[in-house]
Image (cartoon, rainbow, N blue to C red):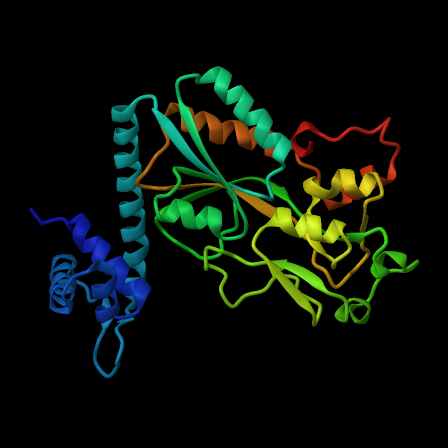
Length: 323
């Protein structure tokens, strides 16, 4: 009977394919390069096909057979992770506590509503709550600092993460009512905002280091968090994008003005439920994920948000997720 490839062999094979070299895979796996090479050679002998082209190339390159086997290897490893996750969930039972990382893009009222229902459903389960910007949610889940992440952006691909899209949000460019940009009676152009101070949040996680999103002005003030950015914009110290759910009431009561600026991308910002494949949620955690998905799936899109702002607030109500 032919020997089957081991899980370790498949994981080493995937690591070499994804890192691009035996030495990089060795560093990623904290093993010697000779051990990695030996593991791949044994796997090729068992499968009776070459997985990498080695001759004449400084870096190993997948053969046609290697590309086909890589698909199978990833599927097998993922299936085994699911099996381990299921067993771990059965063993764990109801969690004693759950650590959540939630993006500021998730409407605050939706978070309050969910946690209020959670407390009634699972009164013995403690919650540790972290709220942050940009890459913080993904970073905390990847590093084991959070069991579940809600929101966030998939700023880098990582096979150890399970990410389910559960809703969306979006940013709205705004300025205080007495800010110069609020006085235009026409759509703003890029040249209109170039010389005005733009407030931008710095990503403390470091995942987005060197990358800026929707930064259009030459003058930039960087702040550590959305709450500070919100207050500075309301104080007339600059303009910038803020989550629609956060500025809705300020726009309605005239403290902020939504800027009509085509250069500012206002596409939907997907919201995810994130967890590590090796750390499955128990009953309480799964309840949270499912409940957030039901609520956030009803969030309005940009067009609906704009229509509601223009409508009579006494006659039009937001879906509960956007409250």
